[in-house]
Figure 1 (cartoon, rainbow, N blue to C red):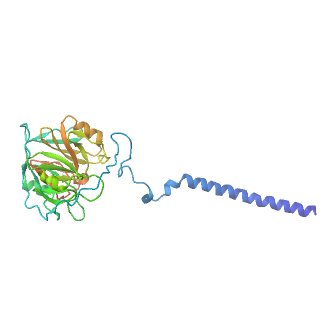
Figure 2: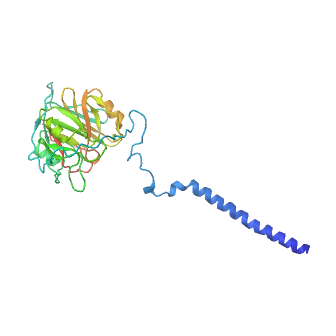
Length: 304
């Protein structure tokens, strides 16, 4: 009897000798899987990287949600075509050189004094042109790409006015949109989507350029919405004497460097236009900033 009990006891001990290592091994596998979980998470399930989506912050120059009232759309009928682009004189209160290079610290800045201004986009069809084509038409001008567009269709996007005719209205929604408007008398103003197109045109709106955020408006720096980051950006601006400015930032310039570069220009309005690979600038037939891929775009601002 004692032999039988002894054998049973030894059998139980042998079973536990097998079970305990197995349990320890399973526990170690669980710990390892937890520690390495981030390495095996599919990329499309992770949060968007900071290069694509600004981080929200309470800082005054951080990301601010630009939510507002419903866009004021439908105030007037759209025009299928604004006809041949017309020049608009933008008079300044001072007489200076036509084009002045004020570039500094990785920021390309040109001041344009008393120019005539032309907007190339006149309808919503594909009107893409390469910079070389525009230079051939206007060899003595400063030329910069302007409004954004759909890369597949070539259709210009955003709030679009040319020759005082509405080509495209504000997009429906509650996210605030902005446009840099040149009036018939040459004065400049930034409007947002709370103002109906009919009012903008009744106030003299002759040309509009649209893409991104208002950086400076009515002489006041606006809270940053995070869209001005470390990528290439372009801006259109005017100062208190109504000189126009074409501004392009290099990759990695960043918001603070851009704002420092324009801090002594007494700017009245500054709006971000289509940036990234579309960014390009020429002056008097010479390409100052080339598109990264020789990109053809449908909307240029031409100043002579």
